Length: 204
Image: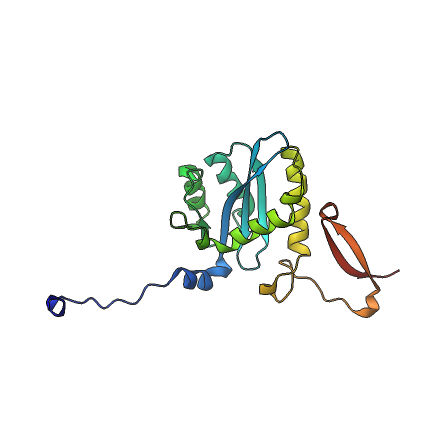
């Protein structure tokens, strides 16, 4: 009975997380870390920054003991000062810290922090990390930092320019031109050390 006497405030409904992602995909990027063990049982951290619109990987780097200052530099290297995104979706790891937030503020980027233990709120970069593991690092014995950087550089090139995505109508993140029969015969090109192949028409 008490509820009918309470003052009701009529406010517009707040948007869901999925609605936010749908509304701001074109102006947002995602950042996350994942770890890769080496042959000598060391653990390397990989910082990955993704453009959410086309799912293309903007930047990656590898460090054994990443700091907040190092992570802030990765954001600067991926965005620069010219064409910066409006939003950055990231987790709550302590690695970000004040230095990272200061760098985001200098670049005029609004940080959107996910809820605790909610990786599903950063779905685009989490999916890419899963692809990297399944299609690359799970099949390679990493010898060290330089070795991992070389492998990931080859995979990122393959991922951005060759690997097709259903969400992009089977196009790659960096759009490819359609080839015609008269362009030549179909040839197979080894990518990522033979883990993957690219098929293109090339003149004899």
